[in-house]
Length: 118
Image (tube, rainbow, N blue to C red; front, side):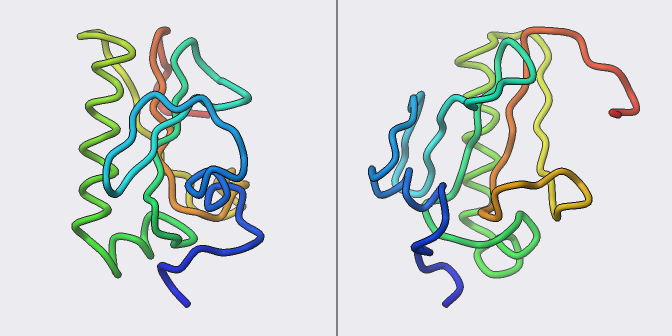
């Protein structure tokens, strides 16, 4: 059922504490933790504690929690990267590089970024 934890989801297991993660911030609705394969000096994932496969489905079903993810992504970026610039990325679908099908935001910083992204 949408929003319910999925037994085979890595991020649901992190939320439940079954899989270790380096948590940098946690709220009632979100968890932020360091990416295990960082693509920048600052690379933190911000996930909702509820399970939806991607950002679009989360936003459609639970817009307040989607807003929480975005707000926390901004707060984590400031906490981890100060006033320097940062990027927030939501990959949606395998064709866009999504590999864990639990909505999540990548917070990237600590280096310059090109536009358009590759």
